[in-house]
Length: 74
Image (cartoon, rainbow, N blue to C red; front, side):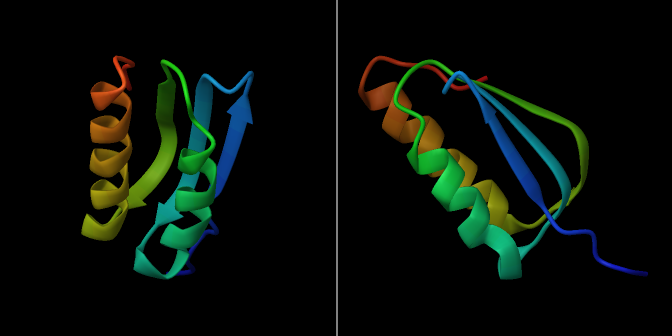
């Protein structure tokens, strides 16, 4: 099975679309995208085929960071 490259697209800094396979080898791409989020944000996983524990960890860190500043991630 061929790994699809993860793609992160940010719209208006409050919508993120993630597609492909998000494993530990491409988590840095996700981190770059998530670090730009400073306000309430919606993440669309509709086209995400797989997410590793490393990817989930980054999402949890982003959720915690936003929650601590009174913002939300959904």
